[in-house]
Length: 100
Image (tube, rainbow, N blue to C red):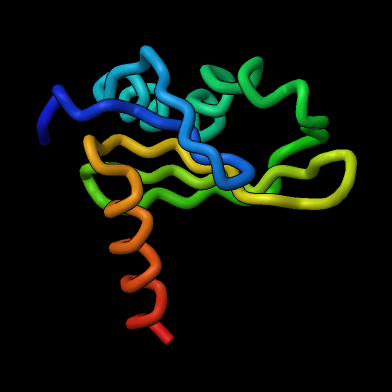
């Protein structure tokens, strides 16, 4: 696992670069599945976060996904550890299609 990969938040079709490291996000996930979300909460708080419904982890170049209740509905908030977050999302979409 490359520690040099960047960590992004993907929400509302925006990639937001963070100063988080993959190591700290994955370590936090091992301790408590909600803990990585606490790292990013204030970044997305202004969008009306109401709560978390579902958590999913994919791959060692990771993608964590939190299904979040917002003021106007529910959306996915992704935490992505990859130097190419768009590619990671494409790979994840292909993975989901192959499971059907």
